[in-house]
Length: 139
Length: 213
Image (tube, rainbow over all chains, first blue to last red; front, side, top):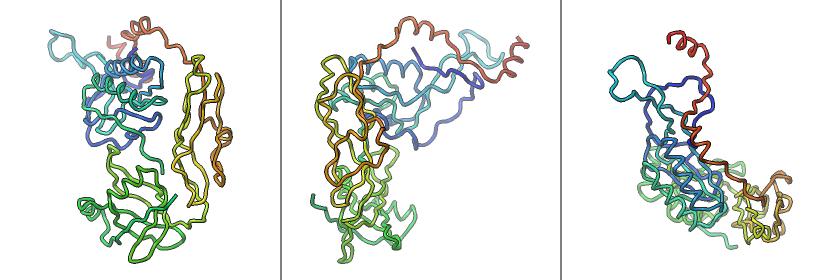
């Protein structure tokens, strides 16, 4: 089931811009390995779900998968063959905004080679270039 | 464990542009503080420090102008990708002084309850301990092979080498062995999800829209 917010203050949003690099959510925090996006943009709820399914199917009940992004932003669209005007279109889908460096998924409690293979499958479902990352050393 | 020694230089120019120039030359800006002495700005060899930090080293001997000082890596700043070090904080320490430090928790073995379908959940990947500077371990090894189904390991159950004590809450959960939770039926919910819409909180706005329609 694709993710979407349970409650929102307003249904429709402005388009906005996604600039700069990730300064938060850019470290592996829950698992031991993660998938980090190297480009910024939008990831739809369907793509997030496709990634989750790819990981869980590959892992077959091993380990744990954490999703670190959530589609908070609604995207509207006008129906086909509609004249311009008559106000903003209806909500079409929900997206998560990501910046370069954002950790998209994390995996824990499994060996590195299995995590690498699972996250490689997830990366294929993502619309941007991604890389496999490990937890940073503790000081 | 032998404490590695690194040679450092004093850094006079401060500020982000001077620091960027240093990084371009393969050096790493750092600050040294502690023991109620004035802080000193330093330039370290980037590759050397990176190797040490990734090698799990916490304490080094800094050699500057013929003098040596034991220091602990206190903090590190990374770039947005977590790929390159940007800056490190170093704390002056005495080798016999006790310090608090976070070390990696290394889970070893396969739990006995795994044969019954149990899945080991790591609630913690790092643990905070207090120990003598010269005896900081690279990681704490935790043998989980004796864990049965529904067993829970707490901080107080983590065996520590002699001279090392726990700092965290003794009842905090470290790991648990449980049966996997059944995933909800995907088909029914997916169909529901296609039409699902979030609840709108701004009711005033909604009312005007309804009245318009």
